[in-house]
Amino acid sequence: MAWKRRGERKRGSRSPLWAKFLVGLGVLLMAASGGAVVYARMLTETVNDSVVEEDLLGETAVQQGVDYVATNGPLNFLMIGTDSRDAKDVDAEARTDTIMVLHIPKGLDKAYLISIPRDLWVDIPRCWDGETACEERVNAAYVFGGDSRAKRFKLLAETVSGFTGLKFDGAAIINFNSFKEVVELVGGVELCLEETITSIHSYKTFKKGCKEYKAKDALDIVRQRKMYADGDFARQRMQQRFVKALLERAEEQGYLSDPTKIGTLIEKVGATLTVQCPVGMRPTDVAYTLRGIKPEAMTMVKVPTVPETIGGAEVLRAMDTADDLWKAVADDSLEPFLAEHSDLVNKDVKK
Image 1 (tube, rainbow, N blue to C red):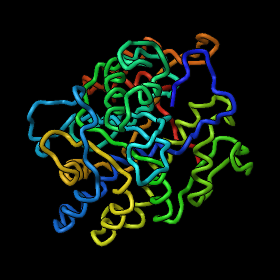
Image 2: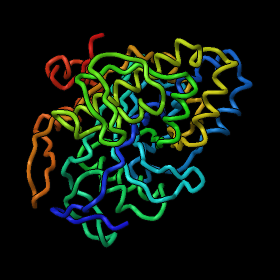
Image 3: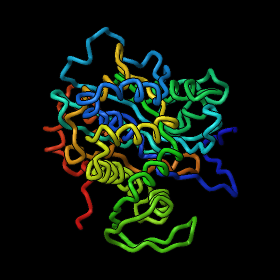
Image 4: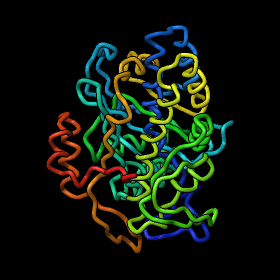
């Protein structure tokens, strides 16, 4: 698939804006198995065998040999969602419209989920010819990366590391199939809409307010971008809220604490989840380390940007405050930073 150069638009196409925000679940799902790791070590191999592990980060990985199981943080994970529906070919052509940084501060008792806009205009080290650098939307890096998901992720990680200054302790990829499987497993999820929208895919109308949705409609809702007044930002907020709502539902039904249920949850998601764990860790080690994080302890954060038109294309430029945001992540000082920049926190819709 050739990526269109700046200013060009692919006519007749429609971006597959899936609910790929379950990338957040990529690491937090492993945290869900924490109770089982403590109370039923027999699930260890089930979890580790179900989750695919791969080198995704390359040189952007934190390399020092620290005993992460004993550490109290901080930890940073880079996570994406892809639009691939091909469950058999993991390296099938795919795009990513959702990119998130999961920051776990010292103490490992809370999490910050930071959404990076797909239209953020950035420097990419290797572009159309695989050698020359360029400026493009950040999600183009995943396309330019190569013929496998590992190569694509590595270039994306290199790109994100370039403008954030971060290296990453771990990584996760989750796709459309994972989203549907988990929602069906828990019987649906409650979503709260900021406004009434009509889907550009199914043409269904979804009313403002909170309601229980089954997998098909929930997927339809979180794919929407053009139907909202502020477009992709609203989609990011919905994606982040979904992560939280799904985890809350899983917790209510015992999937985060009942050893007899956790295996089912892991098996459903594991086949379509790819991760790179911190040095020296397996998925169950990550689970045990992050076992204290609850859905209500997740803060949803957006990157400060301004709209700009480049070559006829509408993109987003990072504001100066974005540099301060990433410095706060690196310094593990997000809490005081966000106290002074509360406008960057995505609030839940009141029920």
